[in-house]
Image (tube, rainbow, N blue to C red; front, side, top):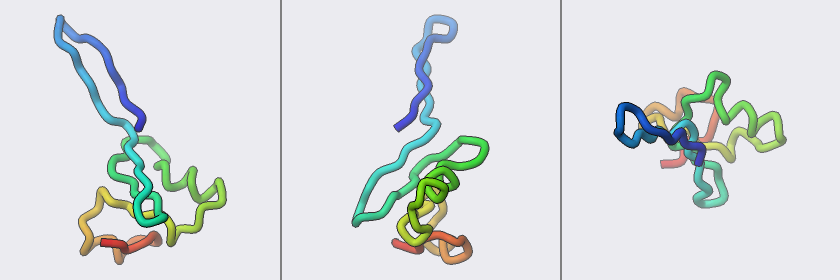
Length: 71
């Protein structure tokens, strides 16, 4: 998990930039607000696309990506 934390006008603020978990031997990308996408970094590091789930897409839409369709 990659988070931004801080204070703004006396209030605590938080925001998730990247949230990836490992489930069923796959990388599940739950949240990704990076410019190039953490999936790109994983593929460059040698992780096969079929081991990466873009979980921020609803299950019915995952079939239209180059990545795993796990539901």
